[in-house]
Image (cartoon, rainbow, N blue to C red; front, side, top):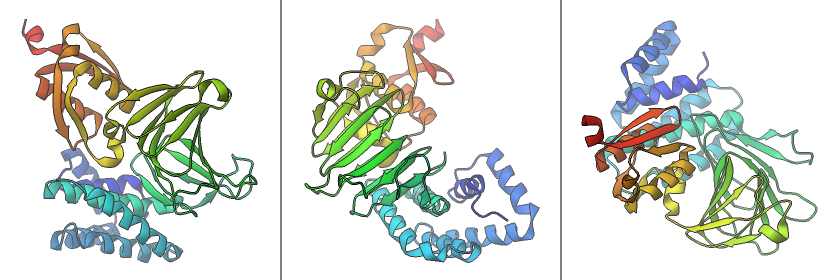
Length: 346
């Protein structure tokens, strides 16, 4: 029985949190009934969660995992350290007990599942001592580097770390999205390569996302962003609450003053729009989710939106916005068409 099957862990957390659908319940039931060991394993998880949800789950899940998987005991110290960091980040802010329990246990499980990807040697970067970290579509992970810097890696992302370079720099290669909290060291520059973008810092906290364009959102400190082939022309300096954007073939960096919290919604666990024109809201949604938005009535763009949501999945965010603005939408894959409710009635 593979207790590290990501789909099974996802179904279990959905079920224990009371958020599973009928289809998910059916899939979990099939897995439980497939093998008596599966039944025993799930019953123990369910019993522990019911006895003390949100407090005993982490120690129980971790102990179960280490008992079932040979060779993972050596990761206990590292895993406990990482899970503590995740728990600390997740409980900040106002959350309902039910929602908190689900998000909390889900992140604990994500950390457990991620241990199977721990410290694999990269062959893609031609440097000795390079380490690769990867996440699947259902997990995040927290990585503490040798210098004390902390990286939180989003889903479907890969991070290559090279900390022993001849020039003394701390060098990262990112494909996907990650949040960096860099330990200050004036003698060792921290460099992130994301596509053709190069991000350089001495010590700060910022988010990097590599998609059709590279986005860097700075939480605090000073960040240098440039195109690797156009250093003199494209270098820009970003400070707190600034967003830098660089296309793969772009010569210049575009800098915006914006609400950078939303560009870290995957990490913070919420989206917050405060009296923001809908046109600007759509720009943020396009960048955060890679979506395309169309308006049947251009006047909607100027309408102001105020909404706070702890549901950051795209469909849930769209529904919350539609409700708040009394709009309807038609969503086909990543293209969303918005219109007034009156237009639909007509």
